[in-house]
Image 1 (cartoon, rainbow, N blue to C red):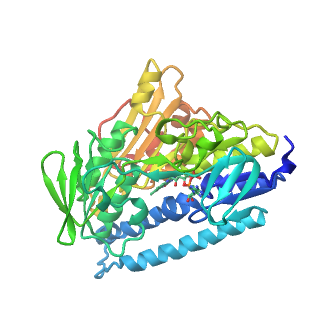
Image 2 (cartoon, rainbow, N blue to C red):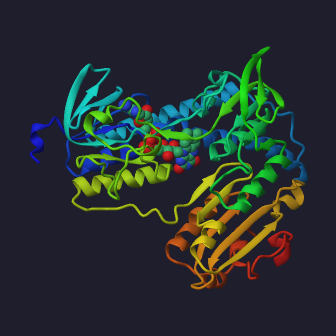
Image 3 (tube, rainbow, N blue to C red):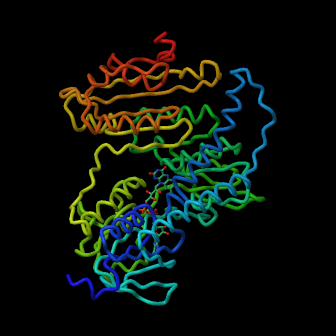
Length: 465
Ligand SMILES: Cc1cc2nc3c(=O)[nH]c(=O)nc-3n(C[C@H](O)[C@H](O)[C@H](O)COP(=O)(O)OP(=O)(O)OC[C@H]3O[C@@H](n4cnc5c(N)ncnc54)[C@H](O)[C@@H]3O)c2cc1C
């Protein structure tokens, strides 16, 4: 294709995790690149996702740390928490990251348009704020996803995670609806910061899609920390009442609450994008249908990240953006490998997981061995906290390969990142067994589970002592 007749070689719509990476790498390969962003450069992860969320998780953990310190000889003073101060500090950090993202794009030679963009046809992008259109040989859709709130009477009163990051004050009571990772993370955040917290989920158990032991284990531990976890229920109607709300539940119960937050999933952000003008095929929930190289049904239009609804995680969007740029502008066709993607849920306690759940493994392999341990981490022998840690290895019995690892407890996410390397390398249970333990740690349990499924034990430190 003669690309010189277009204004740009590549136009990227959406400056989030996937779009920014794709733009920078394509520019590095020598392409003339522009990017449009309608809100803030950095996208969901930086502005209203992973980063601000984890900062709030850190903030919310201090209440437990203060309590735990008593078991170690401390008498903590009267602690006071200031929501407005936390939000201001969080916002300053997001501003800093936003500036870094802008600078990185600029130094890569990418032209930034601060506007909503939509396709006029398969090579033309309308830039709303600029009131003009530009053309590009290749277009990348990287518009992410948007929180989905189901329709019910009073739904307009509910907030989503987008607004949760900007509340004027901490509610005295909050009801979070949803059973996914964002719902359980925010339940932990608000509970830890001192809001009475209810979590409502319409299914039989929270965290659908995760290993069953993680699901039931987290449910139990959250309840121990005071979160009012209710499954098999949802809000039928929401009414405003004296500065708060009355949630009428499908079960017939009613719940008085100060605020209702919906975390019931996110849908690909394709509405109003003009994709029909270009003939781009959309799939379930409006996702852009793509092949292994992120190419849509229109050969010169690609899509990466949450808008394709493959694995809605930041590192995946980044990897897809990078692979796209290498494939199209770097003459190095690259497909993303979706096996063994580690992920964390920054719930309290935390989850780290990689590979197949026990149920998935039983579907895939004839014979599966499970190694599982539930124990009190050493710290909690003095902290007085009754929290238990859970570790589980899922093994394909025929090959001996560890095909899944699931951890519930402190630092589970950090551990899952490292275990993911072993799984990627095809490590067997014997390789885990042959690895000498690091003592005293919780992670040593991963290499000392010799018996197929074992009942709850005491701390690994005590056991090893
Ligand atoms: C509360 C929350 C917590 C999360 N926590 C984690 C986590 O801990 N770990 C993790 O890996 N992932 C997490 N995620 C998911 C992660 O944020 C996404 O997977 C990631 O941001 C996807 O990147 P993306 O490039 O596809 O889209 P995004 O980062 O969403 O970027 C899309 C961008 O496109 C812009 N845009 C949309 N339409 C247009 C248009 N028409 N014109 C111009 N601009 C447009 C949007 O404003 C946005 O900036 C979290 C998400 C949320 C909501």
